[in-house]
Image 1: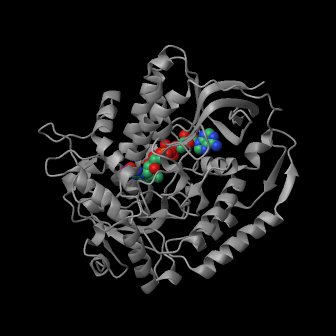
Image 2 (image 1 turned 120 degrees about the vertical axis):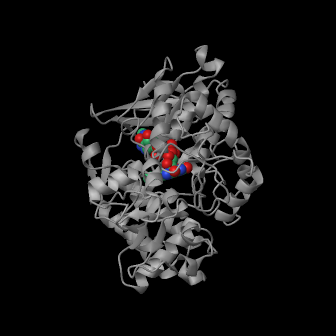
Image 3 (image 1 turned 60 degrees about the vertical axis):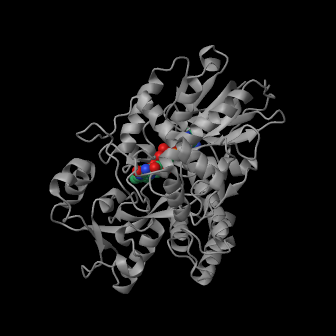
Amino acid sequence: MSKHYDIIIVGSGVAGLSTLLYLTANEQYKNGALSIALIAKGALDQTNTDWAQGGIAAVKSLQDNFEKHIEDTMIAGGHVNDFNIVKKVINAAPALMQDLINWGIHLDKKIDGSFDLVKEGGHSEARIWHYQDTTGHALQETLIKKTKLVEKLVIKTNNSILKVEKDENDVFHLLNFDKIAKTTESLSCSQLVLATGGVGCLFEKTTNQSITTGDGIYFAHQLGAKIKNLSFIQFHPTGLYSNSAVSFLISEALRGAGAILVNKKLEAFMQQYDPRGSLAPRDIVSRAIISEMNKLNSEFVYLDATKIDPAYLTTHFPNILKHCKDKFDIDLFKDLIPVVPTQHYSCGGIEVDEFGETSIDGLFAIGECANTGLHGANRLASNSLLEAIAFAKFATTRLLVKSNINKVPIFKKTMDLTKIKYLDRSMIQYIISKYAGVTRSNDGLKSGIEALCQIRANALSVEMNSKEEYSLLSWENEIILELGILLLEDAYSQPNNIGVHYNLDLI
Ligand SMILES: Cc1cc2nc3c(=O)[nH]c(=O)nc-3n(C[C@H](O)[C@H](O)[C@H](O)COP(=O)(O)OP(=O)(O)OC[C@H]3O[C@@H](n4cnc5c(N)ncnc54)[C@H](O)[C@@H]3O)c2cc1C
């Protein structure tokens, strides 16, 4: 018989841990009326959250206001954002920052004691709260520290959910694989919160962690939930050019501080593409870079940070300075940084309502795996950590109300994966990257869908002989393949070029 919980949260990034903290602060939990388990594929801090650099957007200064933040968000999103959601999240942002401060986060302050708010691409005012250039790490550490103080929690790390099903009583059944013990178990819950992050690993090069295979989006799709705008992939214009599949991110904040983009001939080019220059929204900058690379037949352009005051560079970007110097021997004070647009963020995902609930009763999606309507066709920088915290709080209200309904799991035979497909991950990533990159075309997308469907049709299903094979055969590859097909189909069906989606046949 599987162990049953009222709520299972899958994911330990900002979305998963904030939901957990909001839920457990409630009397219902404290009185013992609510059982909660949280599961994470890796260590608690193996998350994209931990890698966030720039910060969290929220209105604070006197010259700023909600209308300006709303307008900036709508402009970046191509005005297809859900206006009511944009308003709800942005109006909630200052109170959410206060929650983080109450939980103990340390953020940079100026000498006068006020918070050091900075500007990023697409923002008309300085409203990014940050801790140096490692805000995500500060946030992740704070959330973990606070979580460790919560009693009666069940937390399973290095545990992967491989499969989710739902029974006739609306109870969710999960197949969980313990990667260390190499054992599987069945779990069930009345309400399931997917906080599984993005889809970076669908692509050959990404700024994301290796856990980002889109598992939650795949599970939700399998359960019949609506998936929206999966093709709205934001490419970060300034991933550090290297041979590695995971690219180190050179934060937008560096351009906010005055770094400019120059091509192979060392010519500044952004003004030709957009009056906002190097600080134009990411999709515009990424396309401009690709255009310059094609013109000059180069594999990258450069970011020039040498004109920034060295003292400012040292205090605001210690992590980028150190990483570039130690790992790549690039000295930001005098060297140019080779950069290339790199897969960075999934703007679409599992469609949810204003409380983070999907089209399936009791199934919630929070954070990067969700499509809330906040980002529209493109995310404004530093709005994603904000979105995750906001929806963690909004969802808590409904999760608590729904937890009063007693759901009884129907006994099911123990779930197991007995067969698994042999798939070549790098071939799948190559196809997705080639046809669903910064620029797309109808023929390319059709070819990509055909190629992926061919791989699916030809894949050999093999019997599992032992639990060891879960990790060896990498069950994630099937998820990458299936989401790749969904992503390309979604791109093909988009009627217009908007935000991050740019199809050369729709110009
Ligand atoms: C380099 C970088 C810099 C960024 N900078 C910023 C920034 O400055 N500001 C900003 O707002 N945003 C930024 N972002 C985006 C932001 O960090 C992410 O959108 C956000 O952290 C996502 O949080 P999340 O909780 O949804 O997912 P994550 O933090 O990625 O966490 C996902 C969790 O799901 C778990 N998981 C996944 N699948 C399974 C499974 N099958 N079983 C069990 N567990 C599973 C993982 O183990 C992990 O715990 C940045 C992203 C990157 C990569």
